[in-house]
Structures are given as structure tokens and as C-alpha cells.
Length: 249
Image 1 (spheres, one colour):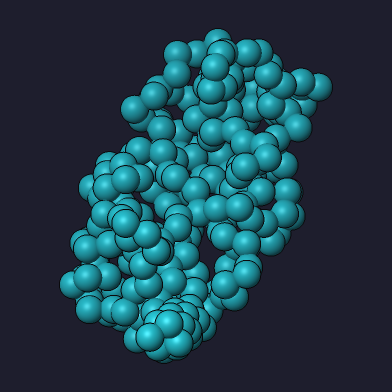
Image 2 (cartoon, helix red, strand yellow; image 1 turned 180 degrees about the horizontal axis):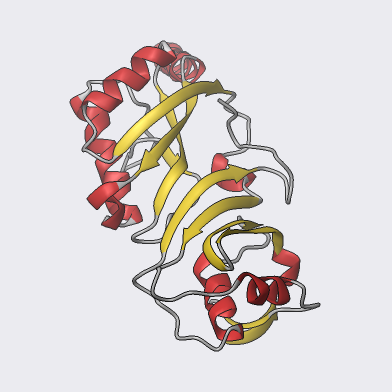
């Protein structure tokens, strides 16, 4: 009897091993536009979970008493922001054709979410969330709240840019100048039309694009047009200040 239980336990163990060995992780790149940009990060997770179920994809689940789909997003997007470069890691119970994976998910996504591509990644590879070091943003300024090109140049030439930055426990004055890797004004005449920037993001160092814009408007001694700026995340990078997309297409 004891030998029978031992053999059965060994068989279950082998079944578990086979299940894990068959798993395959995928990294997907997608955009977030239109009204769907006003759904929060938790709702986005639920949206993907439902799309996976509707597409009848063999997603892998965590172990334990409360199993959940193995889905991990790279970096939460601020509410209301557009994005051309969001990333999510999804582990499937078995390998799939990447084209089929993209097509099936897109068929079950709402308007405004579109997956561009998917690639296989190793189970031991760092998650997209742990890999991020910088993000590119494009900011479109309102026509009736102009900032001159000269002011923008003076602003970025400062040796330090001090802002009040919230941490988990307090608010402290912080120099964000080291977190700005590039700052490129796009002008119409002598006025700013857009700003393209690369700033730090991720687990080690991070600043928000709106925090930088607030500092610019404060420097220009102008009211901050909080609901009139259009923010769009254009890419995520794995190395600070370098052209190193998380997933080159």
C-alpha cells in the first residue's frame, strides 16, 4: 500500500513537471487609444483576462488556493494618456503560433486596444515590469496656452529642476534633471506645439511626464492646463537614455 501511494505521488509529480515544461511565455505590444484610455490599470487587467477567455486561449494559471491567469503588465499608464507602446507578458499552458495569438486576442478586444505583435520569451527572462528603465512621451500643447521656444530652452538648460515629488510616506523636493534623458521641442513659429521627451521609468528611478510639464509651466509662470494637454507614450526602453525598445518590431 505504501509503495502504491509513493508511486502515485511520483506520477503526480511528473504530471506537474510536464505541465510546467509545456508552458510558454509571450510578450505582446499593444496600443491604448480612444475612450478606453480612461479605464484604469485593474480594469485593463480584467479586460485582457476576459479577452483571453472569450478567445478560448490555453492560458496558464498560478498554483495555490486562488489560481489566477499568469498576466503581467510592464508599467501602468496614467489615466487619460494615449499610448502606442504598452507591453504585457502572458504565459500560456502550451506554445502557440504568435500570429494566431495576436489575431484571436484582437478579435476579442474593444475599440482602442490593438495588439501589434507578440514574441516568445524565456520563462527565466526578467518580466517586462522589471526590465523598464525609460519611456518616451509625446505631449501636445493647447493652442490657447502657448509657451515660447526660448522659455523651453531656458527651462531645460537649468543645472537642476526641483519639484515636489510624492513618495510612499511623504512629499519631498527632488531634482528631476538627472531623470530627463532627452527633451525635444517641436515649434510652430516661436511657440511650442509639441514636446518629445525620454524620461526615467521603472523600479529604480521614475518620474511622471505630467510632473515635468507642471515644472515647465511653473517655470514659464503660466497656469498648468491639466485637462488640455495630450500625453502619448511612444515607447518603453530597457536602458536609461538609450534607444533600446523593450520589444523591437
